[in-house]
Image 1: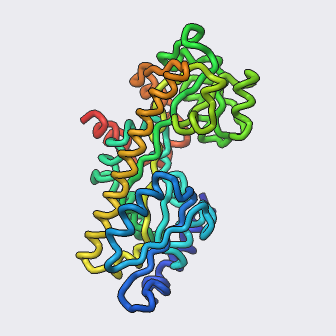
Image 2 (image 1 turned 45 degrees about the horizontal axis):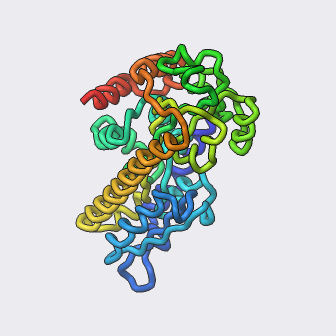
Image 3 (image 1 turned 90 degrees about the horizontal axis):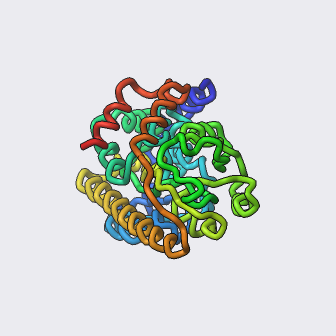
Length: 338
């Protein structure tokens, strides 16, 4: 916590200097176009990258030069927000996990079953409840979050056939060795789901599933297909326990250089790019259900309400919820019920 506070204090000082001195390097030689370099960790063919290139860049071309950089070649993944704050970068596609490194309350948006689906993500982002989160990022980091991008739903993928193990509630996952990423937060989520979480490097998952060293793994359906996990597993349980997201982020110093009319265009372009990426990702997930069923996989939905209740109860009683603003989880859940 001290490290985060010190880090933010240093960046706040750098932000003040940037705002007082103007954003160096923002204007191009022609004197009117603003340079918008975006540092992305994804590839050029990533849905987020494609949507930004197809929609965002052309929409702002009259007054800004959009210059994306892929595969973390401009700035290393996880350093982009600091680069924006220091005035060394204009844009990034960032995560709630990265923001939580600066502002621990953002961890609420990384917890299981907080977001219920893609539409719920948008409703939460646009609701007044998000404004204090948004404003703090502007005030202390000099970063404006323009729009929310849908990454996909993580599902449980098991070796057992449905006849051997039908998962309808968290109790059904008791004793199941479920591979989860190795951090404490991921391992906690695995336990909250009812499983016995097993940390394992991602590149070892296929072999571990094939040999039976683990009973299953969790990932979005595109990953299940890309990594051919369907070859060594027999069922997908559509728990949708984590609806993952990214935010389109821009330097507040650069934002303030735009006229109100230009700001409106930039905002609309970001929203349109996010919507295009969201629509395509949802369609891909639907297509992959049919593909996996064609490969002989059982794909079905459990009692999601039972999973949500158990997982949220586990979080509320944990240290992860200590930084969450009082009442916000209830507000988020109420939006999902509408």
